[in-house]
Length: 322
Image 1 (cartoon, rainbow, N blue to C red):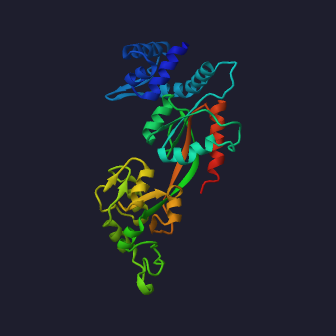
Image 2: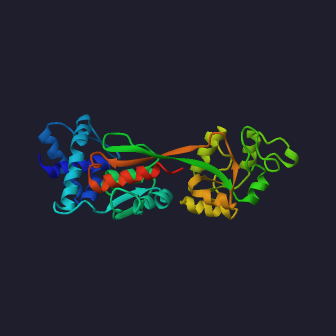
Image 3: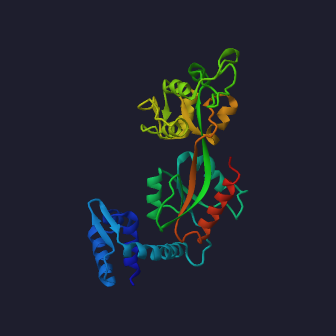
């Protein structure tokens, strides 16, 4: 079977569109269509069903992609690295900006990471959808996402759990009267419990007070605050949008420190600010919300040395993250 036809087929399968596959391959859209039709004629089976916004694989197409894609990826790696070179080629990594900057890059670039010298790195930031699409298209070698991908074209491994904390600047927390409050009513006297050890506010009272505060978020849809409210209060936040919206949790923390509003942040990211008193927890539930990250590669690529070493480095580093 013609490897060029298989390469085009895999590109279409991953991109979900003849047009996007053509752009990835540097071909015209008619050329891609012609190659897929040629492959379908040779196999005697349709490989894709046409839809208004692209294509979806048939059962035969899905099976062929599962069987062919890992081997094609391996051939591309061999051709790109050269038979007489070692496997220390650049690793293309993608994931959320804060996690990449604060945890993944230090783990991969440190001399104490184990498994040989640090790899040559190229890092990109993006949301789960963009990152997984880029991984499938071959733009990245390794991705970290909060969504576990389905299907046979990706292999995913749980990497770490991230605890979320509701925080604000001390002045804002004092105004809200919920600092350190817990659902069991065991807040510290003089803070959530008020002077003289008065009873701590109920969960409903805590949520009502929090709903009056401005919010700092990464998106207008309030993804972090909404997830926290749903998990802890079984409710939606009363605010419709953030007072400050900035697409980087490090910037969200900086705004929260300045008193711009409450924020829901990963504990690892705001731990230094909590220790210094620059922010304080507004609420301390018995079961804080967690979010799981997954380490994702294209199926069959973990055997490539530069990807396998990086994968192992990150798993080893994550075992010590708290």
